Amino acid sequence: LWACTRLKGVLDWQERWITPRQHGFRPKHSTTTALMELCTKLELALVEGEPLEGLALDFRKCFDLVPQRLSLDLMDALGMDQSIGRALQGMYTQITRRFKYPIGVGETFETTNGILQG
Image 1 (cartoon, rainbow, N blue to C red):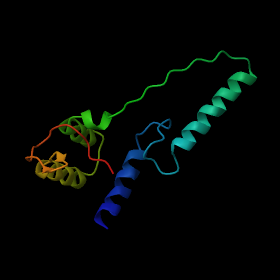
Image 2 (spheres, rainbow, N blue to C red):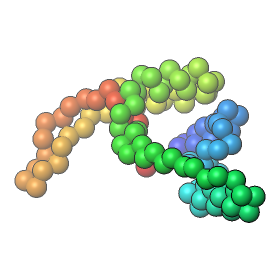
Image 3 (cartoon, rainbow, N blue to C red):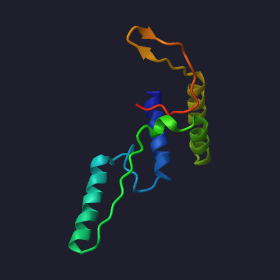
Image 4 (cartoon, rainbow, N blue to C red):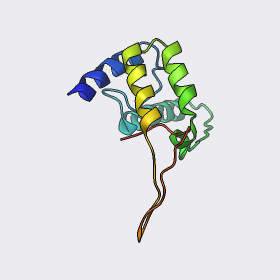
């Protein structure tokens, strides 16, 4: 319940500054809406005889590379509710990770990069 309530607050906050071209992790937006927007632009260019060019970038593993401190500072600078920021900071401070092997798990270790997802 707490997470659901906080997520709604974060999404409301995000909508105040996020670019309209962002489709991921937004209410009523998805990869489908991004594709529909792209197809509409392509069709219009073809109908009007405009030249077509494109560039695609895949930021694979992007969220595993972001420094946690940077993301927390950025959220604070953009005006995210401080109680959410404190909760996230506490979570990242306490989290430990392990590698999983077929015969068990490795020693715990801490990380400074990576935004938890899912």
